[in-house]
Image 1 (tube, rainbow, N blue to C red):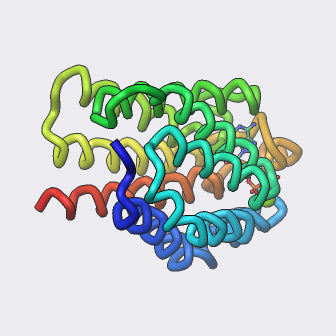
Image 2 (image 1 turned 30 degrees about the vertical axis):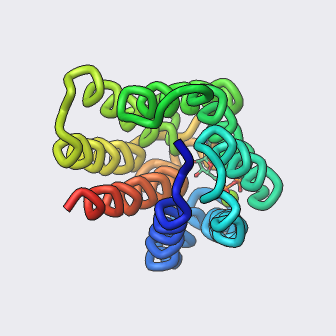
Length: 212
Ligand code: ADP
Ligand code: MG
């Protein structure tokens, strides 16, 4: 099943808009415990994807995810670029020859997160975007296994993404630049966790609207 152009465009634009709306907040988060470039890195990646949106819309999902992954790797820079790149390349591999539906998406998303964990040698509780992405992968799997209705699944995904993002506030970082700060990182939300939560929420809203 090809990814439709309007669908892909809507997801990319929703992500770009929510990141733009929160750009100052995210920059401040990364300035507090990182080097401050996270929002600019991400916006570069989203702009690159936006310029590919027409092309992506003509591709099937495995090819589109592959192209997204490669584009993020080359455009973003920073730790987040190669990590998101790895995520989408693994999603591409996992969804090959499969239909795009909730169980297969849940499995592909989990494979993406698994690849990201290996690439960054990180796991839950290290004050990174994995503190959002791991709970979201689990929520997708639960929704698929228990055949939840999509609106319910989306609501739960938002809830766990927000909780995961908030959970980074009280953690110390053991990976990434914030790990150099030790105890001083405590009290600040991780910028990458916040942006992944924002983008997941925005894309979920587009999906929810398409169901109405
Ligand atoms: P850089 O840290 O190279 O400046 P960015 O600022 O774009 O890159 O991204 C920083 C974000 O990347 C962090 O806020 C964190 O969420 C995420 N991150 C950093 N290292 C890792 C890792 N090993 N595993 C998962 N996520 C990570
Ligand atoms: Mg940074």
